[in-house]
Length: 255
Image (cartoon, rainbow, N blue to C red):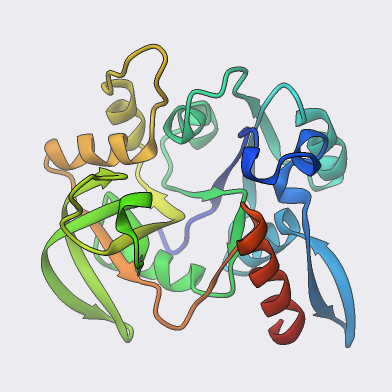
């Protein structure tokens, strides 16, 4: 296989940090200002995600939507023809991805959160996944407060296309005592083994199933998980007001 052809985009969250606007509009329809054919245009984040993915050969998309704003997104993306699946209850990022098992149908696939987009790097992530015969590949970035994020712990560091490459030995979700400052960015590639791993995750009925729990299960099963540093690429986050303002300003000036 020379490329990854499928992408799952999760868009079922409530978007509470952007409340008022996200009570009626999915986060992924928030616009960023970018240049197109020499002119500035306002483009929803979902279009930027899908356009970037199509450039590297992704041609099948699955959008996981919630029951509240799913209809708006389905109407907006109807002409692009993605597959839609529903997460009727907000049970977490991992549970949302699990809804796409039939869509993956045994193939490797990207997973992408809907509240941000990378300026570049999707091709490098795919190349690292394929050339290292990994079961999971993810981007990481250094953060000042790792207790707010999913964090990796690695056993060995290497280099891949001018990026640090980490052989992951453990992942933790918002740890009290982080073992590194390398936070997971919300773009991944997985083999379908992820689904069986997520099904083995046991949480309290009132708790959410995080994607990191599935990655941890994969590691426990001896699966190969690698991470690339996000050097040179920027994650444009629209998930909270401060990040959205920063991303909006960056996109207007640089994209």
